[in-house]
Length: 367
Image (cartoon, rainbow, N blue to C red):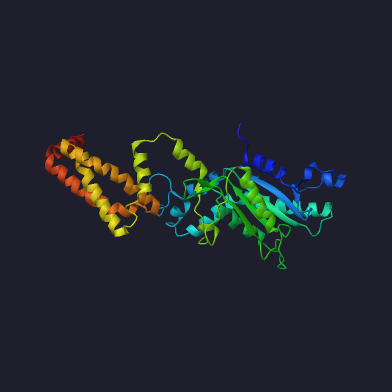
């Protein structure tokens, strides 16, 4: 059975010179009973607490969104949308998003407060008042907790203050995130798993940057990987281009149906990307006009053959609509217009259908 990230990272720390597993030390009764951190480093001037995230929080998002689905502003769409695309249509989307972020990051806040207490108790029981605290976060599979979401929540809780304007959680000097729930595509088609260091100024300063850099290098070596430094263009965590590992695996292992291959092709060649909304409306109308004859009753073989090309174009178009987060209500006027035209054409071609309809309604009224 494959080892978890938590198991592998603990094995990795045991290989580092100067890193001590606190649980393996000879301790006094008081130290043994204390709510301790996990490791010492840098001659015990650095106290490390490890926190792993293993409980999925996506159900919390679904629960909150479900209460809004019946609203008229809620967008109509096919497939799955990211939450931010849905919320932009709701007038109170910003407030709902704040609720969602708080819900999915509640465990982060809880673990941060616990780590602060553990580092504080370790300082006290081992008489290390000047030591600094490092919180290492391991995220193996919770893809809803993207790196930017994690750091947004942790910076918020780290910045919380008492009434006298002093910071509440001052024992943690720095945070290191090690994630295998997300990856960044690299130019040579390999995957880069993020390992990101976050400082906490002005809450606290951190004096052991060299330890962090060495840890990153050694972790890469431990995994037979290489370090890829982020581009200078990246100014914030939101600029990092991350993809979900679990979704990527799902896409690469599932049976590829014809429509899936069409969608995959479009992702590599998004030729509608340059269209503005006016052009998209125009394109939608053309696609519908070209598709309609082949689906109507009495369609000729030539008409049925002609729509094969447009049947492939339609998933491409819908992939672009989903990429932009366009509510399908945007296309409703065109659908209404084409519906009337189709109904008119059907009446002209098949007048007996209307007669049967009238005859049926007449019989019903005579009962």
